[in-house]
Length: 365
Image (cartoon, rainbow, N blue to C red; front, side, top):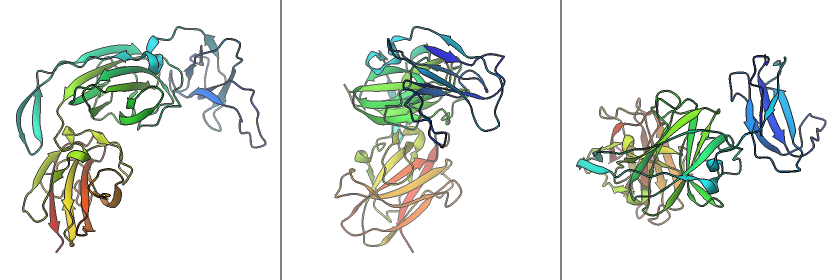
């Protein structure tokens, strides 16, 4: 069923909400009922549209409200029925096939190139019911969208809606597990286009061979979008478990690029879900300095230092973090205890600021 106020007759900012229980309104005008789906501007700056799966014999309550105080006027409410696409539910996700990839070029300082890529295209119109029970990634899982899946290849894969035929703001959420129990792997919000022009966005995942990944493309409207799945080169130290070891005061200037990284979702520090590379430092008993300050840092970086429980990437705790200590570069100091393993994470500030950086780890003067 679809309910909308998409009409020239509607002259104020509307919000449509659907409930399946009688509306019990308390003394503070709070509605004590379960909201199935809600929308503000699905079909224009003022008008709204929601779609939900109905059940026979169930009575539904439709609330049309103003976006905020002072927004009042006339509206036209239209109800219609429609057939949802099969992949509006997770269990009927459409499987994507990722093309074969060929890696070429020397791996120097984490750089490389991917040649002869093939891309899978899927063009669809997003109409779906709410998916508010999903675990939250960065994107909005309470909106409309469609489901896809792919089999991991053991390499990096870029998922993207950056295409001339994408006509609606999109977000991408990637999960491991199954439709009953999911864990967020990566996401890209509709609010961050990650360097795309127009409405699209993109994210990158490092896949495990034979593992199935579930993809939910959420949209802010009911227009067409194109989803692509392409091979993507990832730096060897893209994951914490593959962190590159650094010896303090070795004189080495480490070169890297967050453009060759997938996002991490550790809760130790604050910058979750950003493309990052990982490094490992053993405590010396001195105050150490990790810095991306330098002429070769041309992208906005964040540095985080985390203490490991033993030598594991699990149960990390935040020791220090910084953003923009020196322009787009960052710098942190911490007392590195002897016998303790520390992980240094260099992350992009946002999806649009990925790029090259230099890093050093030295003893504080």
